[in-house]
Every structure is written in C-alpha cells, then in structure tokens.
Image (spheres, protein in one colour):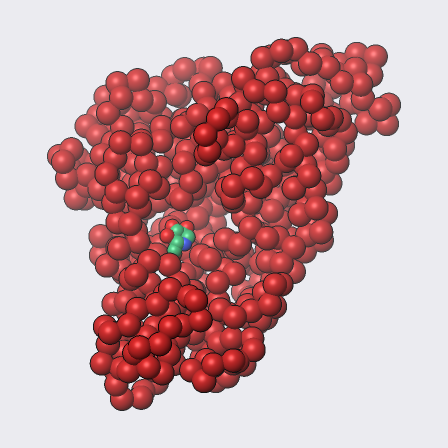
Length: 516
Ligand code: NOJ
C-alpha cells in the first residue's frame, strides 16, 4: 500500500474542460500545469485525469486509439511528462485513466484483428468463428470486417472488447482465461502501464475494472486474478504507484489488488441514498436534502458491510461527483453541499473532489451531447475561473468554438466570486480538507465507528479515531445522547450551531461539528 494514499485527497480533472491555453476551445495539459497551484490551494495533493490518449473521441477519450500517445489536442507526451514533474514539485501525485476493457475501433490492434488472415492480433479481441452467429448474449457487431466472425463490444459501438478469455470455455470460438491469447492481452496492458509509470505517472484509475473476463463467476475470480497479477508487478517494480478501480465492489476489488475502489452512484446503494435519491418520480429522499425526513440507516445498511469486509485490504473512495454522474447542484443548494462535503471529507478511505464542485458549478441540463456524453455532458462543462473574463477565463476562443458551452446563467459561480465571498462553499471545502490533513484521525485508515444513528431520526453521530463528528442535514434542531466513553468536548470544526453538554449533543438546523 503506497503510504501517500493515507493522506491523499484527489481532484478529478476532465481535461477537455479545465483550462484552454491555445485558444482552440478545448482544455489542454498546459492549462492543467498552469492551475496546479489552484489545485494545491484546495488542499488536494493528487489528480486523476480522464483519458488524455490519442482517440477519435466517440466516447470522450474512453475509446483509445493509441495508449502510448497523448492526443494532440491536449499536447504531447513531453507535456504530460512535464505535468508529472511540475505536479511532483508541488507535492501532487498524478493518476492517469487506464482503459483495459476495450480500445477504439481505430486502434491498430483492432485493425489487424479484423484481417481475414491470422496474425498476432487475431485473438486480441473476442470474435466468433462465423459472421452470422450471436455472441452469448453480449452486444456485438457483425459484417464490418473481412474476417468471418462477429466481435464483442464492451460499451459503445466504437469500443470492441479486448480478449481476456473466459473462465469456463463452452463455445468453440472462446479462449480460456489462461490461454496464451488472454495472457498476451494482460501483458500488453501491463506494458502500457509500465510505459507511463516509467515516465513518472503515479498510478491509474481503472475504467470498468470488473469487465475483463466475460464469462466469469459471481466473485469475478478470473478477472480478479488478472488484477492480482498486475498488483504483483506494482508491488515489485512500482511500490509507490496507486491503483483505483471503477468497480463499486470493494470486497472484491480490494482483495484482488486495488488500493481503492469507488463508491459509485448506483441506484439505491448507500452512496446514492445520501445525495441522489431523486432519479425516479416522487420526492427527493436523499439524506442530505434538507427538506426530507430521511435517517442515515439506508446508507449504513449498505456501507457498513462494504467497509468492514474490505478495510483490511484497502480504501473505499467517496466522490463529490464524477464525469458520468449529475452534479449534486442539480438538486442541492450550497448550504446542503457544505454539510454533504464535510461528511465526505471526514469519512474513511480516499476522497475525490470533481473539478468545479468546490464552487458549486451547475449541472447544465440544456447542453447538447458531446463526444458520446449524452446526459453526462451536463456535468462536463468548462471550469468557471473568473466571471469578468471571456468564457469565465476557461478559454479565449469564441463562445461558439467551445468544446461545451460555459454556463450562461448570470449568477453562475466562479472561483473568483467564491473566493471573495467568505460564506461560500469553496471556503468550507478548503477548511475541511485542511482539517483532514491536520488530524490523522480524519485520514484514510483511522477507525470509523457509528455512535448514534436511529430509524426516523435525522442526526448522525460517528467517530473517526478519537474525534467525535455529528451531522444534521435537516431544518429542525436535533439532539442525541452520547455514551460517556465516546464523549469529546473540544470543538474543532463547526457549521451552523452545535453544543455538547451533560453527555448530550444538540445540533441546530443544517449543522455539522467535530470535537476532539
Ligand atoms: C466508464 C467511464 O467513466 C465512462 O465515462 C465511459 O464512457 C465508460 N466507462 C466506457 O469506457
């Protein structure tokens, strides 16, 4: 386990939309380098960049054409190495996005794989042995290649699935997961990882990490073996490199070798019921919605098992949002977000802040889809630096040349306006992250314990190590009796109003407090 993860706070940058320095309307690596001090000023000491590789961009770069080349629109390989170096000088680690489950249909491997004559890449993807048969219920394409077969897809039509074999072979065209072809794919992915690790990257966020072996068992043990093998390479040659999975199953992902696994917004899970329980008709029942009556029990019922069964192996990563998820501002106000983020940054594991969430950037539901984003596009709009500048200082390009339009709302927040307003969200974000760095008990592996949570009650009290933390997201005053052994009385952080006396915590409307 890389020691730096213990105190890591990540900032996710969607490179298209962060900062454009060459006026082409799209963000670039130079722009990220320019803004490293800003990232640092938030207290973030690590970055996750969405894919920056060469791509036809039919899925915003998750359709990789060349894993070893930076997309010209972002800069060059040398620029990326410079970003690693500049970030390291400021104490910031950089994770790239590894997309191991599929490539673009324009990748050289795939072009070779489509050829009728057998070659080194014929089994790099998953092909049937006839152009007219199905592919075991998975999505597939037929009739596009000279080769007499159909190929499996991993996501969009442009993303053919790489072949890591199957656990139990039942069809003639399948390859076992321990076959030479499957191992070649794994080794090719390790080669990509080594390429960037040798250039100074600090690890990877792994896209669809559970998707490798298509016919696997319930525990994904064959996919797991691949990650265990990859982790062995890291432990041996790159012990400081971190591996974070898009899996949302820490019991599996962390045991197989990931250092951290995202708690993603999946309908009805513990993460979803906290912030985004509003995707269906009816009222918004998210715990952090100030107007509802929700208690923290639905969250805890889901989270505690995940946490207890995985904490000895690695970390769960809470996120404020990501590039696939509607920003919380779709339904939440800055006051609600202050409480929600204070909770996120005081939970165990390695937290991720999505760019712009620190100023409460809006989810833009009116923007047209861009590069396969569809409804996700609303969370991918340009960073709002300074309202007095064109395009909020994101880019000097004319408005109609921007990758995605900037927020047109005249009340849209910007870094500058938020910094000038002492009551704004960015200050809470900075304060709570600073506190996390100051107190080891708020960091990744300090023990988490529920002190008070009851069905039908809004208040939630928990401990991290020796610190006592209490949350009230609602509008009514609440209180809770605290067992003597858990009581702490020295207030070190407060939003709203908080009192503790004679073993009783009393929190005013929309309050959050930490005692030492
Ligand atoms: C998950 C990524 O986060 C998403 O943006 C992408 O479209 C799919 N995986 C496919 O790679």
